[in-house]
Length: 220
Image 1 (cartoon, rainbow, N blue to C red):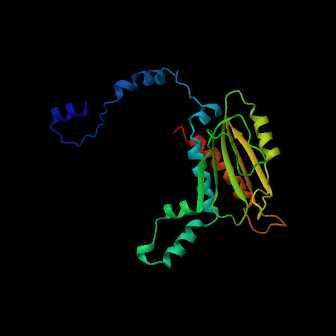
Image 2 (cartoon, helix red, strand yellow):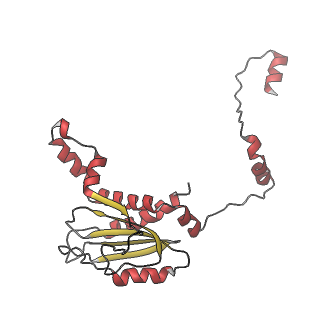
Image 3 (tube, rainbow, N blue to C red):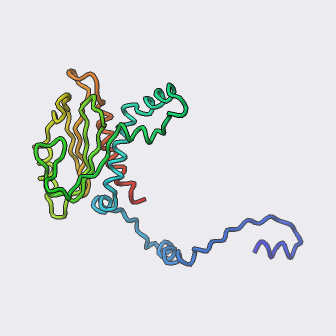
């Protein structure tokens, strides 16, 4: 309309307009929106968990461990003292310091570090931990099998875990939570009167929050 007016009056104007080729595919959604029939869909915990990657969650958690323990600062300090030709990337450095591996479910006998006996009822799991352990820390992300009683599974984990799995150190805190069919399990040292060094309560909670945020971000 504005262009036709300018053509009639001879007036010069700069006219901005938008053109999209996807409108054809959006017409049904626009029609529902225009008619007030569009509804927001919020996925359930089960749907979010099903879309999440166990490996991605475990990697996010071990990266959080690296953040809290100042691993990048350690790397920078070490690289500053090394000849240029001997320097390595931060990713390679982390590969020597941190472990994040799948549990081999094809083995004749499944053994999980940190447990007196391996639990049953899970279809996938990743273990993450530091390679050298000044303080006790280990974590797992499990995906339970369909039909498994998840609360019973979590109780088995807490009943059979061994906070002194590493003979030199001992964890004073065990966390076991679930989201859909995924279970977060971790043993660590949290600072208290007897343990002046370790993770703060806020950091302990941040590990679990990372577990949840990674799941909920997987559908985006």
